[in-house]
Image 1 (cartoon, helix red, strand yellow):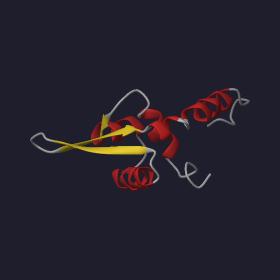
Image 2: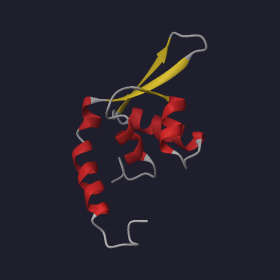
Image 3: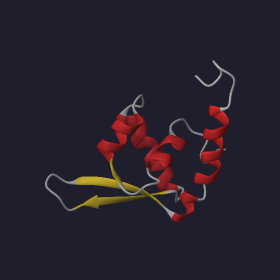
Length: 94
């Protein structure tokens, strides 16, 4: 739970599952989390080996993030958690 239990961690991993995402796009996808919070979580996930960071050689410079092979191992239970939350009685999943 220490690895993926942080707020927004599951959402970040989930949004990276389909391929690399630029930081600003990821920030828009998550909505509700500040850019500072997303940056902190991405740094933690990178340190833990769940996310890879790549600086793009563009003008202006941009950064994109992708889920690692190890990070993909979390997607199975994140999907199960999503399904479980959708089955909760009305009002409990809000």
